[in-house]
Length: 274
Image (cartoon, rainbow, N blue to C red; front, side, top):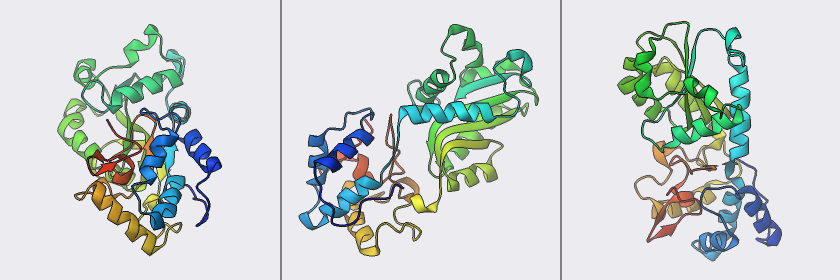
């Protein structure tokens, strides 16, 4: 996570300007008024902790995602902009199944990042239902594209229930993500035939509640957890107990603390998911 300001720093115009600059590209506009409303949900003695937590949010914007996607593609062995110089055939596929989900958004970002928006590149981009008709071989490469994995469990499930059957010809399979945790990478490595690569890799220190997270002490962590229970009593530490403070431009992952995204009568997150 990002290093927050020291304890007791003023919540002044300069700090608001920094937050607004950092979060300017979120899908649902973040304004000063919304930040103030979010902070006002914390009792006065806890506003400093809340502000420092907001300082610590890792915001991954669209430009950063596109830059990482461009770098990741260029790093893949066998890929070349010139079709004649590529090793085998290549197919880029949204990892999520339904139209309009994160996979489609990430494929769009990927195409823009790599200059593949023109129709002449359409044959490279297929949906999962098209894979079985491609008659793939071990010489081919399938790149599955999505945004984020916090635990790797959903990726493992999708592999076992969908892609393992579609890719019985055993092409090389790469799961390309904007960001992932080390835990997710290990889960995918141990339980699937996919190679997971990502633009931003997060270790244990990104978990707000982990002992390696040194920016907040035990008392502060307990205070934040009490508010997180108010935001989501079932998953106060985020999905999979991930404890993350991560926000992507198009959506806040549910692996992040629910005080960031939960939106109901008892809590209004600054980064609602819908």
